[in-house]
Amino acid sequence: MPEEDDNTVYVGSKPAMSYVLAVVTQFSEGHETVHVKARGKAISRAVDVAEMIQTKFEEDAEVEDISIDTDKIDTDEGDELNVSSIQIDLAKP
Image (cartoon, rainbow, N blue to C red):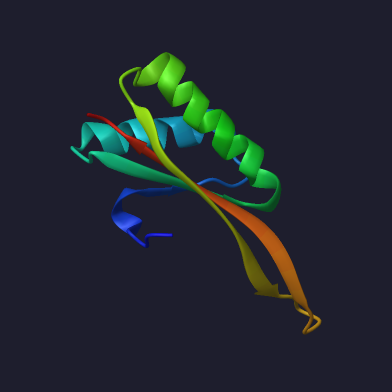
């Protein structure tokens, strides 16, 4: 997955509209591509954000690429957990 933080929106536990606004802001600042990233339970929210962008806010935006991966995370107890992650690349022509 590309590591470009200036045009990346990390989806977490806030309402989806918070992330939709962040993506719209990135597009309005002139970015041609915005990366929407999420892990674990936030993956479904990231998909919702991408769909809302395409259907309501930036209708000319297209899904350029979708990457899925598994991240290894160390817990406080010293164990290692596998957590699913997704990156959805949205692009405006």
